[in-house]
Image: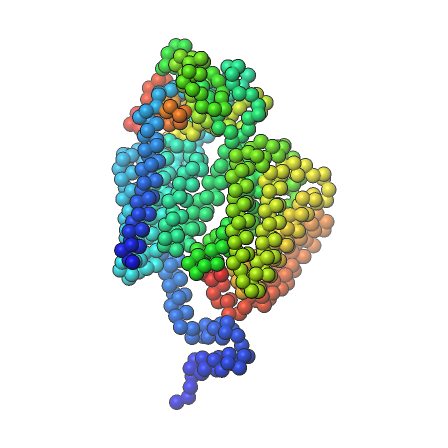
Length: 192
Length: 415
């Protein structure tokens, strides 16, 4: 009886560790398999909570003007909470320049659909958080960059306009932050 | 040698009980007053040990969380990860060993297992920090619930249920914030969550094993329901033009609305099951309680889905929706007090009276504050506190079976 109870307890501790490993594995998978995309960003409003200090990142693709995207982009109705797929294309000058949004779709695009927008296009999955007329705010789950205590504000001040984020995007559009770049150079802890 | 009072009392009490002068509960209360209930003093002492041990676990947990949150650059990421994994295993392992293997300090063992659950949450947020997962990602909290809740049921640990319920409620708040939820729809959803938790608590009360886990569900559910109704009872909540129609993400048809619908259906189902299982006199009370749950769910739906449109009330003395909310709050507190008195559940009576008092006092200031001179308002408020408080306390004592009073304040005392 006691042995079986102990086994169940151990199994539940194992279940919790498995959840932790699963969380890590899901992010590792994105970082390992994902395609590298560069996004321009502006750090806003560093906050310090129980979860640590981080800078809230706002991207060029966070706010989309539906009218300025490709004609195949979805039209209303589109509501907060809806999952959307934003097609991204590299800048003309090369992949080391920030990518931009070319279309907003309500379903995962097929490979052949993507090339119609741009030969190098890919899509990123997001959630609509706000909509007003033709402007749609989209959240991609990559809006926080955690920094050691006390480094959030200096980062915001130093950033200016040259801050970009290297993001990995997997084939299903899930994104994870790889690193932060200031004027094209990676910001590492030792560098800061 | 003359018999002492302490020796004489148990015999006298037994005789009074036999002659039906006092009830079993009153007999126990009389004996407890003089420390003559077997194990009662020990139970109080162990309650203190439990409280101290849990406080210790909480402080250590918060310390570890804030240390990790500081994200010190000199500690490499992998070593922080190893540290937190080791801490989770160590807390659970030591707690289990103390609680179940050696049994020499079960309360401290319980607290260490609770610390393990806190550290598990800290580990989730450490990983999220390392991978820069969005800080307000509700999934992280739901993951915490997913890990902790099965453990709570295996161990029959109400503290872990409370942790899971609070984490879930915060997650819901984050999700609502993500959706840019306006004040009223958000309140409607928390009202629904409160009703669901209360119904779940009542269902747990039906079985011997479930009873240990019932208090956090019932009490957190009640505080959510009454807290939301209390906020809704203010006129300013309904007078603001929130500028949002009842469409989109907050409509009945939206994915979020459907999920909330599932929560409401679950609440009805749990309460229905509770009703079906109730026997004898309790069945009558449960029928009224079910009616209350049903009406409240309706109100929650209206507030959650159509709240912003209701807010456009004309600038009358009191907006009609606020009057309905006041009546609901009054009905729920009265119903709760009646249910508590009928089923001898002091926690329900105490909660009902607490909110009734707060409601009364608030409305006094709300209404008379506009009509009377400030000095008169304060004198009236003082008198209301003095005499109203005294009357409420007398009513509370009368309603609670004296037998239950000494145990009313403890977590396990809620029945």
